[in-house]
Image (cartoon, rainbow, N blue to C red; front, side):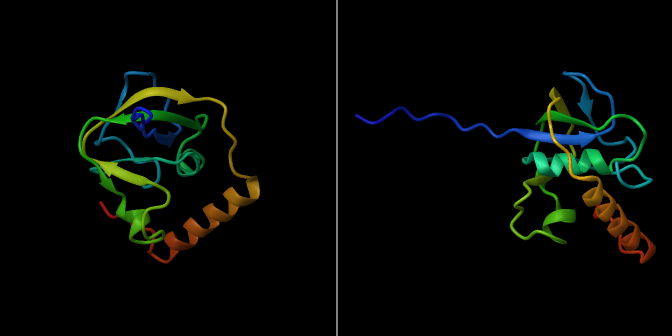
Amino acid sequence: MSAPATAFSQSFFHGTRADLRPGDMIAVGYQSNFVDTQLSWVYFAGTMDAAIWGAELAAGEGPERIYVVEPTGAWSDDPNVTDKRFAGNPTLSYRSRDPLRIIGEVVNWRGHSAEQIRGMKEAIARLTEEGNNVVID
């Protein structure tokens, strides 16, 4: 007799500085975390590391937050990551035109070192100066 099959459940995360609550929706039409424009997609990841970067690099002054989210519709790989940096999508980075529902908040997480964050922000600033910090929307 074989063991019964168990369902696999994937958790998804969204890093930001926005103050949200369970049941709230992250939807298109709001200011992006990273560029000075509204995007037509919402972004999320299947890894905590990608969400941590999202929170640490998000614009604003509020506390860094990571939410557990549930996509409410179809989603696809985020071409800003998979086409530009990580073939095969090892960061499990996705985007959707449909809202993400906040399920909960991850409160005990460890961020990157100040040196790593500074290095990433400097790299982004260089890309911006060169005109290469373009979001595929």
